[in-house]
Length: 476
Image 1 (tube, helix red, strand yellow):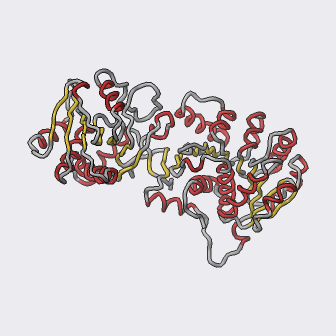
Image 2 (cartoon, one colour; image 1 turned 90 degrees about the vertical axis):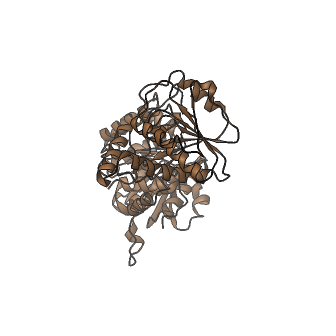
Image 3 (cartoon, helix red, strand yellow; image 1 turned 45 degrees about the horizontal axis):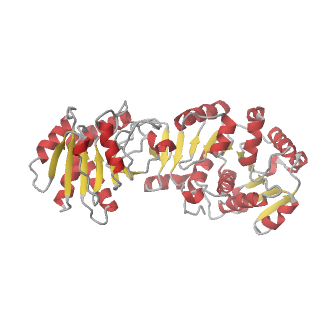
């Protein structure tokens, strides 16, 4: 089973809506009302001060969602007004139905505006953007782009329903205008475009009871807000039976911690130990003892990091190997990495300077064992695989490379991306600005290596490692 929420395009989302209606014998209006109730509940959580709502509705089903939310808000006594923006576009049947149903609802103030200049925004209100949802296939033109510009210039809180209006569902968007929402409340499943850094989207997934089970996808989101996702990730952690011992949980070897960066290996070793590796050994120079001696559960083999250090490795003794944290980029460490790639035939975790050495000696990529996990940050990713025009191109190319070399590539970012040789991609949701500091990558490397030592399953180690490295949860 693939963990995480399915990431759905507009077409896939529409198919899921249709399937849900069939399975539950519901019409689209009932489905819309159920979604509106759950969206409104999330809006209320954001609006603790009960600020008035200004709901801006477009001509399609997204506008219908907005009208449903407006009726719910007005029924609770919350001051609510609606601006209808059609600008000559034909209303969808669902929007026609909602407008006919709500136009005589007295507590609700509904006006239609004909130009962006007619949109009147009050500084004390919250704007709910319900102009366009998914399905746009071209950039907004006048007068819609003017309307979006006016909303973005208003300096009030804006919450978008399902998608920020003007944003495409499946591509980075640097030039075309879209609503710069403080938060997007997306229905049931995140959209691919949310994970492209260029778009800078902040979102929450709202469970609206849409059935996604029959939709096959290859992209998933590890959302820490969803109990089902948390449960799925826990299932990837190695079992720890009551009657077991340290020999039951593998032996991890970490290589790094060169002169001036001894701490990198120590951070990786501690994370490996904390992830439950039965035994953890570090090969690092003798000068690293001051750091590693603070970890009494970790063993230290003192050695200069050169080709001779490879002689200390007995593959039959270790279940997992990680190389890179604080390794350094020298002729000696290049020779060491090359020797290890000749000697070690099992999946390994490759990070930091080991990645930089490979990027300077690309023939080494051919020697990386199948199943290995590479963990580059954005610059390392470019050095290894070349520049990318945008993050969608990066995703596509990393999937190709993962398949070609039968490896896993964990591209670190706000939403770290794991591309797998079977064509699946996983975006992680536990990243935060707290991780933007030295040592976070070393922790990730150690955690993945320790999990792999126990499970022997590279994908599970990578998924659980990137999820738990960014979370506040303890693995054991």
